[in-house]
Length: 111
Image 1 (cartoon, rainbow, N blue to C red):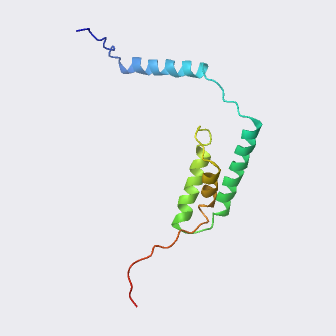
Image 2 (cartoon, one colour):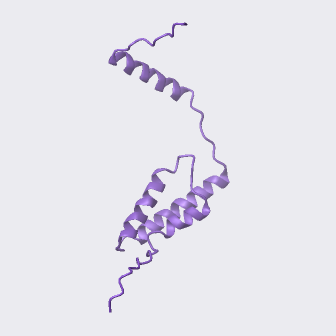
Image 3 (tube, rainbow, N blue to C red):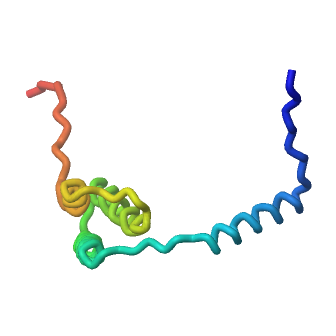
């Protein structure tokens, strides 16, 4: 039966130093993401639309407004992440604060 090498137990100070060195080497080896002019223009347009929708929905009331504004703010915070919504999803995101959800129908048939 082969012996498996067990990793040495590190003290908290040694673990912190190892993390710091790993982060430092990651920063040095980082490859900058290059965006094309098309991507930059699309991104700039989307940011403008999202900010406009947030500013137009300031005085509105309703639970759908709160959720829609939160979704737009999250979108703006996560702009640098690789997965971005497609055009249809983005349009739904923009319209969310302004679209009143349909009222729930009850089966209560009292007159």
